[in-house]
Length: 113
Image 1: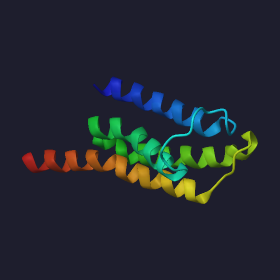
Image 2: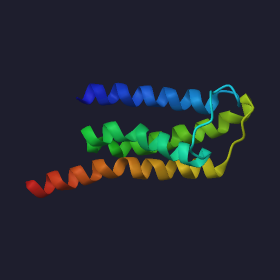
Image 3: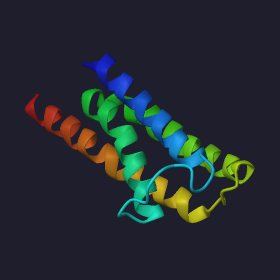
C-alpha cells in the first residue's frame, strides 16, 4: 500500500509540474476552478496519499511539497507564467488540508492503543 501511495504521489507531482510549468494556453481547456483553487487542490492531492498511508511521512512530506511549490513559482517566469505569492499561499493551504486526514488517522490510531 505504501508503494502505491508513493507512486501516486510521484504521478501527482509530475502532473502539477506539467500543469504549472507549461506555457499559458498550452495546458488544455480551462477548468471550472480558479487558479488558486487549482493550486490548493493539486497540493492537497499531492500530500494526501502518503499522509493517509504513513502519517509519519508528514514531517518531511509537507515541507518538501511546500519547497516544490516554491520552486515552481521561481521557475514559472522562465516559461511565460507569472510567479505569485498567492499561488504559494494556496499551495500551503492545500498541503495543510491534504495532511489533515493523515493527522486525524494517526490521532485515532494512538487513541486505540
